Image 1 (cartoon, rainbow, N blue to C red):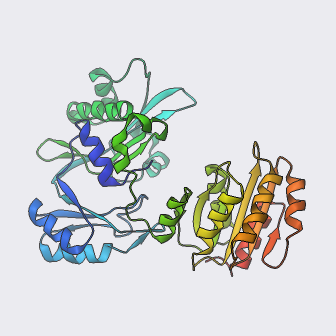
Image 2: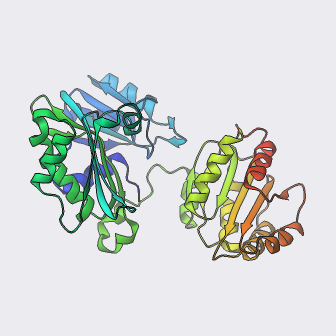
Image 3: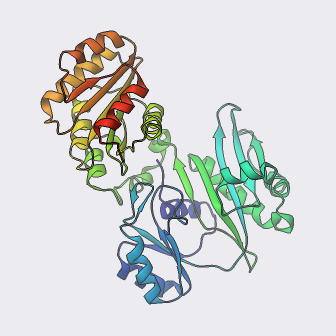
Length: 381
């Protein structure tokens, strides 16, 4: 479960990580009211689960009520990375001396926790890794040993934090406690800021919680409540689908998150633009396919749908039967391109072939099917 910034900060604060005072707002009036209670200057920040907010104009500083109101009006409704901004975080702006990067995640290959710290915060860590890899300190942490003060000091010093390493070390320990005791897959703070007063604060928060640990955290229910979802996403959630709405014209259905992401990439590669990310997992039966087609078919911006299935445990003929049954139940408004590969793909293609028409077309290759879907969408853009 990916958290919004304001949720991530709330979670970090439970483990003692300092965050600037702030609050959520859903309207310009609420934003102005929140700013008045915090005191100026403030930062008005778009709440979307995607990076690049600052570059897109989704983070703005305000020194009075009129500026807060104007910024809130401009940011609410903005589209950033295919996500519509429906909620703001209004935060007291601090005087910053230095900005750092810090994160904890699990390196499955190394079978250890991985800490990453850099003295160059405030920019994409990928950019730092490409331009100056020596500016990034990496340290593997044995989960059985954990993270102590010595580890924190070592990591901060290795990252070149100069005299600030003592201040940062204590916060790193709290971030690690959030990562482990809080059952997170990722805890990332960029920037982790040192104020001119010598205090360290998390100015941003990217937190991904491990869904497998949800039984230990009944409080996570609040995080999962729909916030800022558009009509498509709300309907998909009601139907139990793993769906994220985007702003393209090629609808995508795939089985598996990796394949769904690859399908989005291939559609982009051949000149199109995905309208959504939809992972049906292993449940490609008639009910799941009908629900998936219902959501995508109701999106007025979709001009073609690309169903990309790789059969493994779920065999392709079962998927094909599910697709055929779903087509009968859903009044299709746009052409459907189907690609089946993997276990019993030949049998699955034969089943689909029986219902082929101008509205239902099969293609054996992923690239060929993507090109066809983009072409049917009028270029996909």
